[in-house]
Image (cartoon, rainbow, N blue to C red):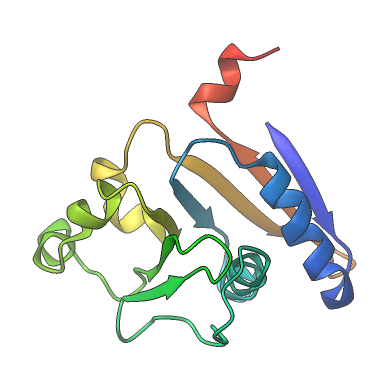
Length: 148
């Protein structure tokens, strides 16, 4: 388990940079947190740190998935907002499995909608809103359990 504290919006870029330093070979990151916890805001900051020049200002709530390309690495990044997905069948209909298996970075909001098909090496990222309004990101990965 690894943690990052985000005291305020001004420290978001630093937190995204710190998150990047914790990323390994995993390509699927599942972001969990209550409505308004900052999932979209953090993912957008992370995309900017990954070299996405276009402004990913919104959530793909209605399109379900947005595709970005890093201008520094030319890698594809998929940002999912599965809030409106009501069944695994709907997820299959939009080809979620193909995205997950693509090797591209997949950043997923509301991953509980597709828990049954998430890869075993998915990194779980829980965003908690603390009493003072700051956020705490807790990262968990099965792969890290083998590391000391």
